Image (cartoon, rainbow, N blue to C red; front, side, top):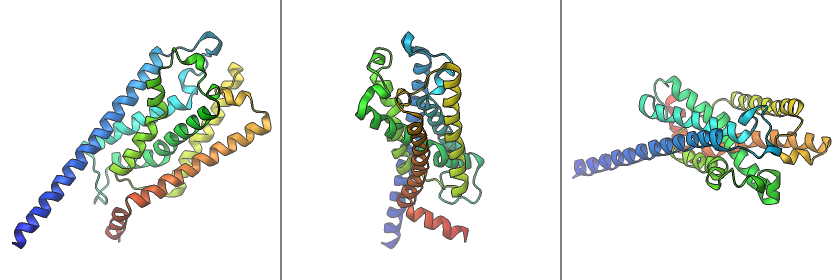
Length: 249
């Protein structure tokens, strides 16, 4: 009787693991294809009207486009890890691809996705002309808007709950993210210098002191998103993290 009960429990656990693995692969595959297509469509078919067309920097001057690239790379790496790496909580030997996946999610994919989603929709609610002027509606379809500004957050939340990851040392995670954010803000000024315009209309209406405050707030907000991701990861995977710590000891 005990053996039958034990066998039933093991069978149920195996089924749950199988379903979980299939769900994880589905999330990674769907996200990778979706964001890759979003990049492809944006690059090939979205042409801004002449007054707003500034060739310097191309699409790479927009954080939304850079974030889509980050998300695509992350989900492709995650998908590869699903097959040739490992999603174990505490593997005896962690494959390089798993280490890259965990760091990419922690330091870049999660905080940048939330930054893009929260910032865009907050400014959109205040005045959409600051981030997505109505004149772009004919060339920037609604579905692409949601892929690049909504789904990046939705899939990050799904990823948070379906895939375990070990956060790096906080100094390494925040260091990598800080370098990315500061580099992007410098890039915005390079674009302004050579093209004569700010990438985002909201910067045009801010005076220098206000822009400084805005940039400092962006950096602080993004770093807080990293800490938020780490905090949520510790809550969602609390049992698994304790198990990993015991195995290390």
